[in-house]
Length: 72
Image (tube, rainbow, N blue to C red; front, side):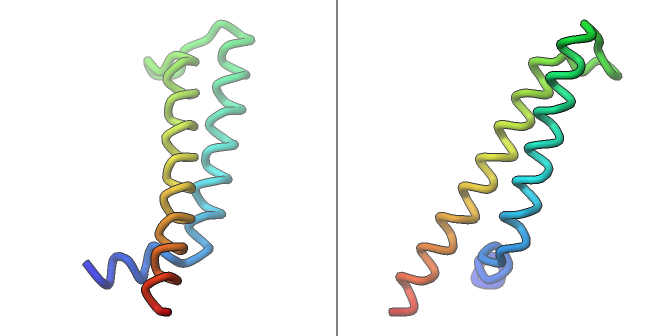
């Protein structure tokens, strides 16, 4: 578990989850505007996947805060 925590506190994952979340939200907006489903994914599902990605970004921030508090 310690190695997972050390891996999760890297800032690259915060950038990764943020960029993926932005892309998923843009795809959701485009599919909603065109009234389109891609491989069974409705626009609402794209939005939910984007929100889940932003929750992952928040998780990385919380892990970084907890890791910093542990090192004091």
